[in-house]
Length: 161
Image (cartoon, rainbow, N blue to C red; front, top):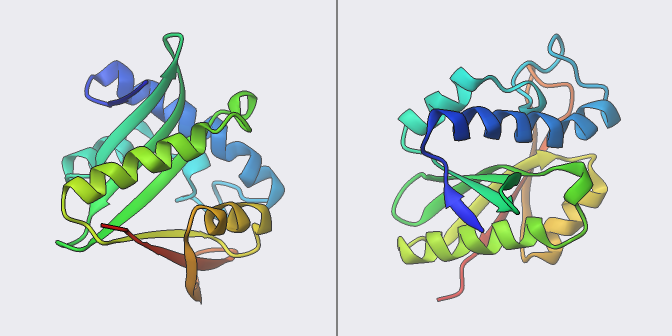
């Protein structure tokens, strides 16, 4: 079941799901609060609440009452949407939960008239990049930011009508 994150408890639980899910990435790429404080593995409740206040829609995936996944959907303009912080707890990976969250977001975006979905990932994360390609995303550009210890790969998917 996927539902919108509304309550304070759900928000706090979502922070834990995001942090735990992205911890494996932080370890793989040697990310720390010092060299990459904005990485999702270090997200705070206040930061997630701020996203919600800005109009970003937050959704959790639940299995037998336990939150096992998370996704955020942000409308940039009438056509363009961003997907952020797609997370599945390590013990629940490889059961199609990430794909289910993504398809849920695609349906939401299409219903809101969106035609392009954009994401940003660590360029060196080859497995994740291939997974997104398998979901229909294409690489659009790469950019290095001075405040990040990696290059970001921006990917997009055109929504089918």
